[in-house]
Image 1: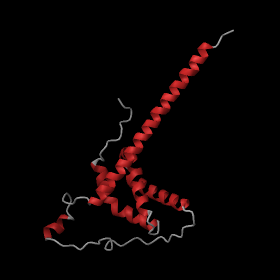
Image 2: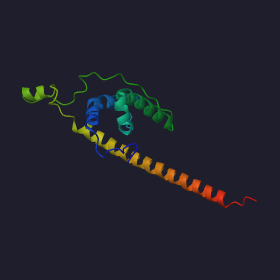
Image 3: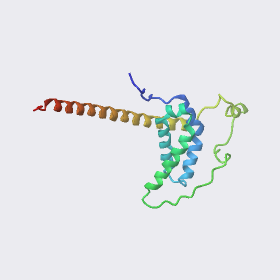
Image 4: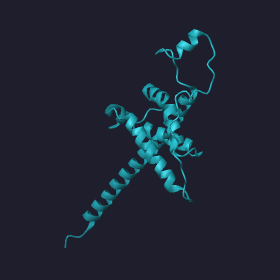
Length: 173
């Protein structure tokens, strides 16, 4: 029925896995590029939304990571241009991996190993929530784009029919 199938309401597992893998790095890079400004959260979520909007195509082309980095750079540049006053941003050095761990590591040896062994780790709830929010925003954007496309098509057909009717009604003499 559809030439291009509509976006599913729920994010696919590979999108959730991608966000879970790159969640901390994207958020930290947005924080670094904005110099710690509070807008880094909005930029981070808009990058995830852009990624969700084009997820199927990017996944097929294997361009998810470069696209996310490129969108993050562009969104940050756009944010800087939109500032009323000139923004003095000092780009912070990347955080060390040991500094990203904020919670103490308690638990049994089995639980500590489970964080490292593949198949036993689960994405953080924060990453899943961010992915879900971005996917919902992308779905809404997709629905509005589809509605606008259908509206434009209907207007084009009606305009063509009116032109044809006007052409038929003209007197050949």
